[in-house]
Structures are given as structure tokens and as C-alpha cells.
Amino acid sequence: MQILSVSHLNSYLRELIDADPILSDVWVEGEIFDFKQASSGHWYFSLKEGEATLAAACWRSNVARIGYRPQNGEAVLAHGRVGFYEASGKLQLYVDMIRPSGVGLLHARFEELKARLGAEGLFDASRKRELPGLPRRIGVATSPTGSVIRDIENVLRRRYPLAQLVLAPCKVQGDGAADSVVEALYALYDQAVDVIIVARGGGSAEDLWCFNEEVVARAVYASPVPVISGVGHETDVTIIDYVADLRAPTPSAAAELVAPEIDALAAAAEDMRLRMEQALREQIRQARDEVAGVRRRMESASPLARVMRDRQTIDNLQRRMAASLGHRISLGRARVDGLRAHLTALSPQATLDRGYAVVRRLADGAVVTDPAQVAPGEPLEITVRHGTFGASSDSQA
Image (cartoon, rainbow, N blue to C red; front, side, top):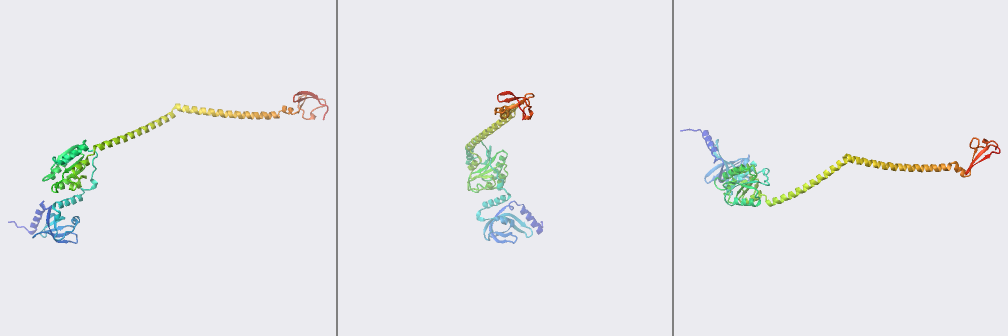
């Protein structure tokens, strides 16, 4: 017989409970009983079902996430882990999530996982990626049979037949569906696809539940390419809708989103061609203008152009010199004519023409300007307008 001390037994029980995977992640349904909120903000209460009672505690860090304060007598679903407090030998549920019992277990699990993954950043808008404009390979994770894959194929064939559809078949409902979807996703990650559609038709919450599993959510988050969630109908919301880069209301809508319309692409290509042609023509025109400008500058800088410019300059100078010389000659002629007229007016002949005479001594030809220059009887020569004649002095004045 083995005898254990109380502390050893309590320690053993704690280790057993901590190692149990079921007790580390469990939902417990019961009524709130003896609810207390400590000054520290922690909640202490019991869950009661008939005569059975389970002590429970919810730490302040989890209280803020729960969003409401449960009341005594209220039926709830409480999530957490079962622990054994060695000091008092007391079994206790450490609660991290509480939902009213009427909400349902699946919904409570959904909200708990949504809150936890959201807190980790798996839903952050900053990590959402744009869909490729012209995907070459489109991966699809869905059932290989049924209407969903046919609808997707029809949409792709109609809108964008240039893309290759890469199907990764998987279960989309029932036991093992979540693992099957994860395997299909990772198979597509190795297929060098440009975008992935995760698709399933409508169904009940239980039918769609595999898309609310954490393993599927984390596999979508790990995708190296954008993922579109096309699960159920527009009113159906799953966890991967929050993780995916884009949510589509239906599988067909997901195909519409990922596949550009080929007619619209053709119109856009034609518009681009026209705009490129116009731009090219404008570039050619500008290049021609630049070439013409260079040609003009080269021609103006050539030796022949310089000779022509110098010749034109010489011709201009010659014309200006000829004009200047002619003007000066004209001025000289006018001045000479003026002087000639002035000299003519002052010449002896002009004086003679006015009736005067010039008297010279015949002996030496000296002009007589004073009677004292002439001796009595001295021969003289007198010049008048029309000629010369001799004379002599009679007496001295």
C-alpha cells in the first residue's frame, strides 16, 4: 500500500489535470451561482447544474473581453481550462470566455476564436493584399464534384479564358474536412498560382463549420498569395472570411472578382494602344522639331554660312561707304560751288564789271593805290572791264 501526503496527492492531481487535453480547452454549461467581483476586478462564482457545483474564476484580463456581466441564476456557456488549486485541494474552472447559454455552443466557439485570432492580428486590414489584375493561374480549393466547381469554371471560361484553373480537391463538410482544406491550400501554395479561391456552397452552420476551424484560418493566413473566401451564401459568415484578403458572397461571385472581363480588357488595350500611338506621334513630332533646330544651328555654324554672312556684311558696308562717300562728295561740291561764287563775287573782274579800273605803273607793273606812287608824266596802264589802255600822269596830286 502506498501512502501519500496531502501535498503529494494534491500535486499529483494537479499534474494529472494539467496534462489532460480535454480539461485544458473545455466548454461547461451551467447556471451562475454566488457571483462576486473582487476589488481587483477578478470574478469568482460557481457553475451549478442540479446538485453538482463547480467553482470558477475569471481574471480581470479576460473580464474586459467578455463584454457583459453575468447574473446569478443565468444559464451560460463558460470556456476555459480546469485547474486544481493545491493549497486548498479545490478543483476550479479558470474562465476566459462566457456566453449566454441560449447563444449556442457553436456560436460561442466562433466568437471565442474570432476574438482570439483578432487579438493576434490575423484580421488586420493592413495585411490585406490586392488581387492580381491579370492572373495566369487561379487556384481553387473546393469539392471536385457538385455545382460549385462547375459554376467557377463557367465564370472563368466566360470572363477570362486565358487563365488556367488549378483545382485542389478537398472535403468541405464533415469529419476531416478542416484537415482536407488545409492540405488543399498547402498543395496550391506549391503550384505557383497567382490567387486562390476557397469555395463551398450554402449550408447550415454545422455544414460550414470546417471553415471556422483554427487550423484552416491559420493556413489561409499563411498563404503567399491573395486568398478569396467564397463560402456559403451572402448571409453566411465564417472565420476565414475575416482572415482572407477578400470575401465574396458566393463562389460564383468569387470567380467574378478574380477574373477580369476579357471584353473590357480588350477595350482597355485598344484605348491604351490609341494613347500610346498618340504619344508616339507627339514624340516623333518633337524629335523632328529638334532635328530641324539642330540642322538650322549646324547650317548657321558652317563655313559656307559664315562666308555668306561675311559677304553680306561686306556688301552692307560697301553700300554704306558708297552712300557716305557720295554724300560727302555732294557736300564738297556744294561747298566748292559756294566758295566759287564767293570768290567770283570778290574777284577783280567783278570789281571791273562794276565800273572800276586798275592802274599799274608801266615800268614795273605795280598797282597804283596812292598818287604818291606816280611821278609826273609817268606812263601808266589802266585796266577796265573790257580791256587795257595806256595813259600818263599829268601832275602830282
